[in-house]
Amino acid sequence: MWRYFFRRVSLFLATTLIMMAVLFYATHLFPVNEHYALTGIQQPTAAQITQANDDFNLDSNRFSQFIAYVEQRLSGNMGISNNSQQLVFEELKTVLPASFELSLFSGFIALIFGVPIGVTAALSKNKLIQRSILGLTLTGYSIPVFWLGLTLSLWFGVNLGWLPISGQINLLYQIETVSGFMLIDTLLSDSIYSQQAFVDALMHLILPAITLAVLPFTLIVRITRQAMLQVMNQTYIRAAEARGLHTLKIIIRHALPNAMIPVLKSIGIMLGSFASYGIVVEVIFSWPGVGSWLVSGIYQRDYTVIQAGILSVSLLIIFLSILIEFIHTAINPMSKKELYATY
Image (tube, rainbow, N blue to C red; front, side, top):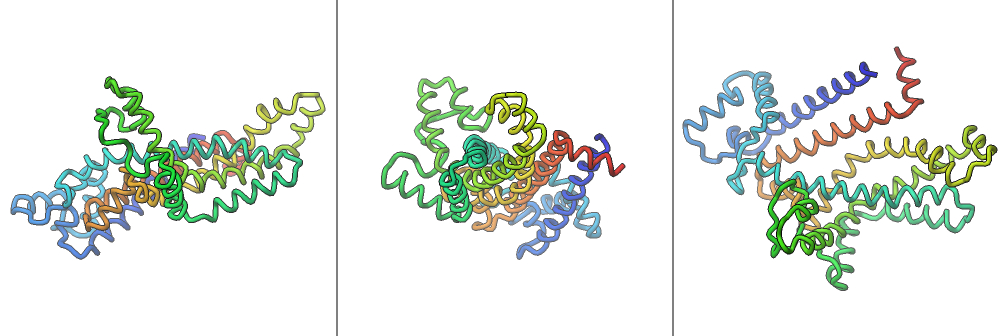
């Protein structure tokens, strides 16, 4: 198993280098001065030019420049934002938690509703219920995320006025940043309005989280249903039924844990689509995360922000995909059998 682990780590490093090579090549295609594209300083002084030459080995060959580029970017030297004149790495640290909060909440919604509905679709004998669930998932999968986000904003934000449609929290609440997760920071705050701030932050999170959760929800329902149908026909399930075990106990203790294995694998596969959907959702709801920060940098031609945004999103997708694949292999007996059979 450790050999497999080190193979996954090697794959992560190799994929990261390839991704950074593409980003390095794209950096030299930007229609600006090379120093400006790398550092974000539009009118550098002689000392700043010398420093950039030393940091990125601009006087050496392309290979040496690439090695220096990787070292600088991975060490946190991502330059200065031309728009805010702040360090890009510091800005990235402030927007990452908001994206994580939205993604985790959306994933929680997709799992907490998707798995039970998928199990119901698999075990129900009512054809109307089965077809209704499958039709619902097909509709949810087909709806464009930008249209869904705008529609929910119009219905529940503008027409009904139930939920806020932009931002992370009302600006009237002054919440000190501790973890970067607004829900957690409001609970940790010693303000007398901390409870009201928590409710307000939760209300701001509902619409973007539901919009982002639709895609993984539909996939989880369909994959859970298919996995449950296969598991319930296995010999050990029939043996448990023959021993007189209660159906609910069989589902919870025997069928569902095995059915969740392909669900876990599907989560790793959908990470790329989930991240691209997340960028769209953040822009629609003005959510202060990496996605809206990256799109804003593209509009303003803030080249260091563009590089940092693409780098951070890509590294997260690569890392989480390989991590989920490793966990899936570790908990899946069939994967272990195939893994050891190759040695």
